[in-house]
Length: 342
Image (cartoon, rainbow, N blue to C red; front, side, top):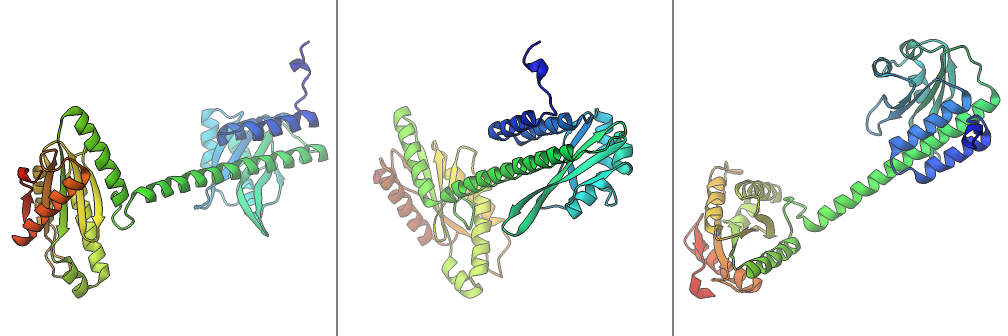
C-alpha cells in the first residue's frame, strides 16, 4: 500500500494541507476553487459540490465550478439559480449557513440534502458577499459539528480565493488603464504628444535603415479659438473629439494619429502617402455637420522625410511651415513642404 492509498480526505490534517496548497499555488481562480471544492466534498463524503459566485456589479448568483454534475444536470441547476426562495439565494442574501432537504436546487441536482455556506470577506466593519459554497449528498445525511467546522473553513478559503482573484484583476485593469493614460490624450483618446514623438523617432530610424520615406501631416482646426469663445468649452471639446474621430477613421492601419496640442493634430504616415492621407482627412471633415452653427474645417501641412527634413525637428518645422501657408490660403487648405526646404 502506497502513502497515497492511506490519505483520508476527511482527516483535518489532509484538509488543512489541501486548503493551504490550493491558496498558496492558485494563480487561476477557477482551478483554486475546483481544488477547494474537491477538498470540501471529500471532507464530508458528499457526492456533489457547487461554487456560486456573485458578480460585484450585478445581483444574483452564477454557477462557477461544479463537482459530480454532468452537463445536463448542471444546466438544470443553473436554470434555478435565480430562484429567490431557494436555498442558495437565501444563503447569499442572509449570509448564514443552511442545510436543506428540499427546494429547487435539491430537485434539479437530484440530491437528498445540501449544505450551503456563504462566501464572505470583511472590509473593515462591512461584510462583502462573494457567493455560496454548496455540498450535497445523494442520500440522507446529518452534518456533524466536525464536518460543519471543515466546511466553514473551506468556505472561508473559497472566499479568500475569489477576493484575491478579483483584487488581482482590478490591479491588472488599473495598470492597463494607467499605461493607456500615459500614452493617450484624455480628451480624444488619441496618442499624446510624447507617444507621437517616440513613434516618429522610431519611424524615421526605420526609414533611414531601409532607405524609405515617412510623411508627417499636421492639421489645425480653423478659427477654433473664436468658435470656442463664442460657443463655450463644451462645444469646443465636442469639436475636438469629432475631429479626432474623423482623422482616426480616415488614416491607414500603419499610420499613427496623435493630438499635437490645443486644436492641432498630427499623423505619422510611413511612405510617401502623406498628401493622400491628408486629403482623405479633409474630405471626412467636410462631411461633419456644423457645431452650434459653426462649420468645421481643417487646414493641413505635409512634409516628407528625408527630402523635406532629415531629422524629426526639421521634418516638423517643414510641416508647420506648410501648415502656415495652408492657413494663409483660407479655411480647409492643404499645403506640402517644398523639397528645397530640406
